[in-house]
Image (cartoon, rainbow, N blue to C red; front, side):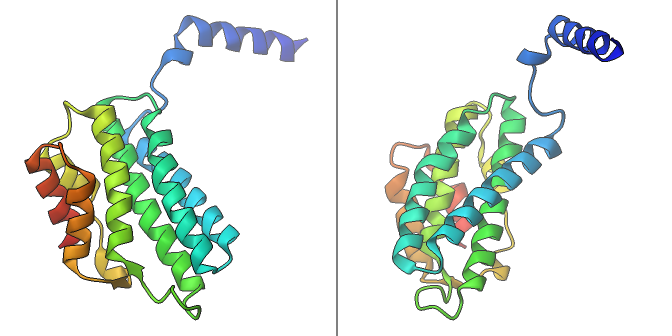
Length: 187
């Protein structure tokens, strides 16, 4: 009897407090953690499924860039927490790729992460961030969201490949935002 009463009281308080329409994140840290954990687990699952097969891994990379940013863009939150969500997601994505590439390091094609691949990840997340919080996104926000210690990655390729992928994928986007993204990711 007490369990039923507690459940009814809990449900009534949730309904009356508008909890179902509330922001899913209490803080920026909550949003960043959700982005990190969701993305890291999807990236890890994809590479595990590829089982160090370079062709499959490339297909999964394209698949993730196509769907994961769209999924995250569907999370309804404030513009500032949206930036935190994508910040955590970007970090989780790169951390996950780094770990998965390290697990396959002795297999041809996994000696390092291409700058072009990193640029593709950044473009996908940036477009979704821009779609979620367009009025909030400034060059400073872009620099914060895409800040990462790239020295811990085994990157292959040259800066130009990164910049070309970004500029090609972001035609029509404000030049100051594209420049901030290029500077944050490609330098």
